[in-house]
Amino acid sequence: MRAIAFWAALLGLWTVVQLAFSPDAITVALLGGAALAALAVSLIAARARRRRPAPALSPATPLLAVGAVALVSGAELGTWCLLLGALITACGLATLVAEVRR
Image (cartoon, rainbow, N blue to C red; front, side, top):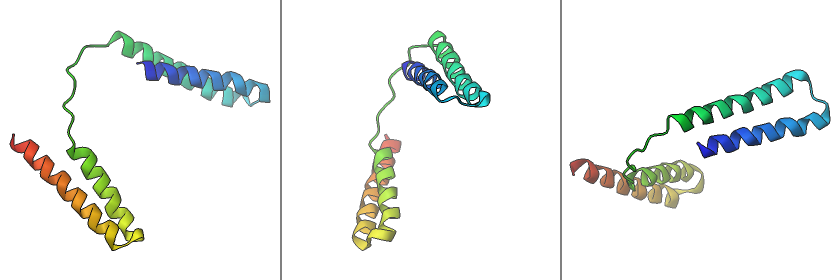
């Protein structure tokens, strides 16, 4: 909720700042409307706020993501990066399988 409210405030600030540059009315309407919409979403999120249990943090997801990035980068950087990406991806998959079996 706070992040959305911060974004709404930032969009509102940009709307005010752009007034110094004599923008078109549509530009002000679009940016100001986005600020108002973000503020509305923030207020709705504040009202609907419920306590939820903290999610379980899994190392498998970041390992798979880093491995995939290393595999894609290996196409440009060479075999060493491909092999490293394959190793990281394999570790991520092994972690994921171990978590599913629990």
